[in-house]
Image (cartoon, rainbow over all chains, first blue to last red):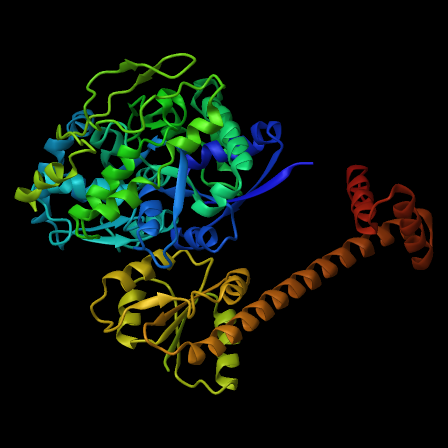
Length: 405
Length: 192
């Protein structure tokens, strides 16, 4: 007798851990059957979760914060005890536009600050105010793009047009000339590159080396009422995440995800993000980014409260919400390291002792203490502009942005 | 009350529009979620927007509802957030509704109920159509298998069918599966 959990997802490479938990027996080992519900918009995924048609969802981390703060239709307290991945986004721009960026592609990706300035200079020369597709107002993609543009003095609300469209429509919109570029999760950027419509302008991992991306979100009330189910699911996912990180499985994983039930795109495009071999322009050799997309290593799934607060700081920065102690408390409470610990204590999973950390301070991998079991090595997590986010000093961090905005 | 239906399945939109017109609503527009549909929608200044939940352009629409200055009043999803049964029925039927703030819920509720019924009726119709298509193709397969048996074993049509049916019963399979296996085998052996 197994318990059935319904989980909504969008067709993206970073649904990997959920797909593998279901298809490779990790859920079954915990007595769970996962019923994965494919959705085509974040709005529908959100509604399915908020109105109880599913128990959990593969959700944009900022959307989970926004729904909790009442910024996206029906307010609902959401809880994210597990991060499904970090990194995995890519900004692509029409080839004509990208001609204004560094022609040395490796350098273009390695130097986001220089590229942001090249980008800023290209805006005035483009035939219209550049229209850049983002997958949602409350996406890590939109937030990262805003952060990156602003570093070069570009006001994302004034100097460019950010157009919301779902990942699956991005390539079609490029082809129709409705947008001049877009930032999305894979494989959609690679699909546009492969179609000869665009070049890579920047990759998320070079903007924030360990950028929070998708979380597993629940309704808070359901999470509190079903601790045993939640714990079993998290144990299944953490094993699936290690499986996904293993390079020996990347071929099999890209074939699994290419199935019409999941991403429904060619396996070789999906493999790019998994292996970190990103092609900047169709037909050229890939540039290797080993940390393009992380699932399990470096305690990736651990929901650091400081990351929820970083998201909050960006919502405040772009005037999407008022800065208040109540909002800080509610935003921070969306990430649930306590549930993560409860579910995984006693397993081999390395467990950070703290629930918050200073974000952006690590330039090199750092071994840190862990409660029980093996130690953890945290990966470098710097922001490309060198800023540091101390969750205890949000005001100071926000004040630092005022000159550019 | 102006109702806009955003849908790229012409048939479903028509089914919904007819239902609304029959119920006395006469200010109805249908918009296809393509290209600059958001700008067209803004010009229409709708009171109620109905959209298929499966439509990938919902995020685009919601962004417009968030940032638009053209709409004097904000639009919120669903009529009455406390009516869980209604919202559940709408989501099950695959429909989302956006309603101008301030519109009385007793005015909007019948629209949503009607939309749910029509969406369900349309889904049922699609399912029946699909069933009819399958039935038709099943019959063709069985007919071909019968004619193979009639030719190869000099049976009458009735005898051929009886043979297929008894084989299916003996093997615990559907007649159409046995018929398909026979056709495949016959093709492999050089055909009729």
